Amino acid sequence: MATDNGKVDTRDILVLGAGQLGMAVLRALAPRIRAAGNSITCLVAPQMLNNPSEQEKANLEELRSLGVTVISLDLSADEDSLAEAFRPYRTVVNCTGFVAGPGTQLRITRAVIKAGVRRYFPWQFGVDYDIVGRGSGQPVFDEQYEVRQLLRSQDAVEWVIVSTGMFTSFLFEPSFDVVNLDRGTIHGLGSWDTKVTVTTPEDVGRLTTEILLSEPRIANEVVFVAGDTISYGHLAEVVERVTGRTFEKTEWTLDKLRADLAEAPSDVMVRYRAAFALGDGMWWDKSGTFNERRRIKVTDVEGYLRARLGH
Picture 1 (spheres, rainbow, N blue to C red):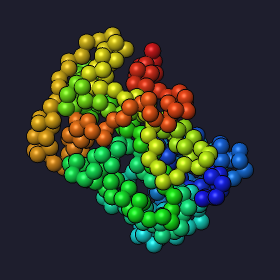
Picture 2 (picture 1 turned 120 degrees about the vertical axis):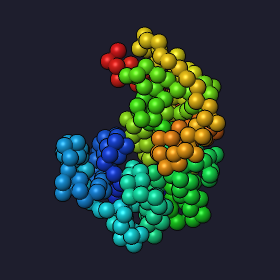
Picture 3 (picture 1 turned 90 degrees about the vertical axis):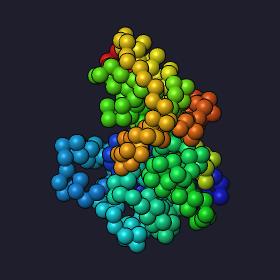
């Protein structure tokens, strides 16, 4: 992948995962790679090929139509087995999440380095883990920080981190309980002034493709993108304006959320709410992002909500 002239080598690309993020990346990336006369491969869990759900069947059919080769491997496999699977590829784009439990991302990253992959896009499609650091109350965040430290400690593999914030739809996920459209409630995490950066998976797919193919080649860098950076107070204003409804609005302070976490330390959503109430590391100014610098149109929260509601 690395060449002296800053060019991007589009041969032998492997995308890990065909879930929401993986499919978004493949929809944007595969046509560009195929147009360049090169192949692209997606690695999925064995059960997706052996016993696919209806959604997985649809995804597999779409991948075939995109000309993507599909292979399978259990990502809970040992590091050597993963390295053996990754060895034929020059670029690996990791869209898997923590499907195989804690330690997954560190194990995959070590396997990528062992395999001699030339360029790696780790599964870091989230917040600014450099600012969050360790001890946020989110074990997942701690591991993501350690992945960054591991990548920076070596020079065999070029890496590119794409920081996207949370998926825009997560703000409206009932179990996360920030905006509940059915119940008509909005909760401000930390304070109404606390901000969060969000991006839709479709935009993550398009922007990751542009970053991957950008020349001169981007290497060993954290690239920030954003569909929107919004305070919880402004979010409430947008939701009420777009829906034409008045919502019950409650501020959930950091003290309250930490108390919730103390009572239910293993509750994933309680952990997420406490983390996203921190502010620091959960947002960045949209004006400095890759998409703003390249003038790439993206979907903001208002645009997402209008499309969701059919407005």
